[in-house]
Image 1 (cartoon, rainbow, N blue to C red):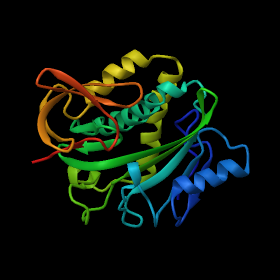
Image 2 (cartoon, rainbow, N blue to C red; image 1 turned 135 degrees about the horizontal axis):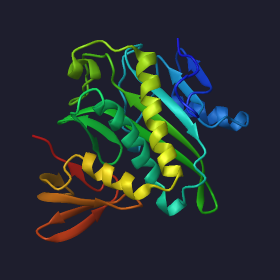
Image 3 (cartoon, one colour; image 1 turned 90 degrees about the vertical axis):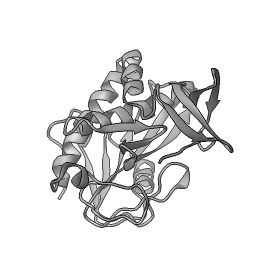
Image 4 (cartoon, rainbow, N blue to C red; image 1 turned 60 degrees about the vertical axis):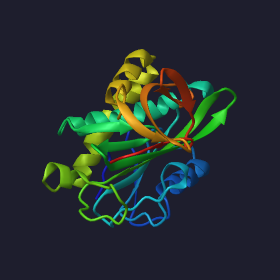
Length: 251
């Protein structure tokens, strides 16, 4: 079903298809342990029985309707204290692809893709570290493509938004082309432009929204730091938050 990608330089030059698996990230990790893997290898499945997202959140995916896959990378050019730059790179790759179809998508900090107030995709990045740099990264991506009904609130799919059934292998290849462009941009050291593009695509950036850090308050997102902490302006005072220290509130 899934073949070696023709339009990319790095991503998808080896594709490992598993009809069903526990988790593509776990399968990718086992693959990386067992051999000298090719950078850009993709592990993809039609059925992921124990998929999860950031901080262990459950990822729901109907068999054969969506994309659930992992990419193995060797971003040794990324310093440890800048590792969130890889999250920015991957998030931008996804949102670039999606907005080429309809300009209605945004990145929700730290690792989700949204259309308005509804979640379309999630990213889980697991890094292996060598000294002060990233040695290996497994990029898990779950993208709702053709599924129409979800038990999880605020989940939505490309089909629901665009009004048409998508061809999964085509979506995978076009999405990987977009991610690869951003990865090569990061590798060239063009982070300043990437950061500007990320903030421009960030849900709630420069807008007053409601948040919950144990108490509900109104604030404005001003920045995302290299370590991934989000910076929020509350009554002209800047506060920074790590993952799970704050929640976005939706109407």
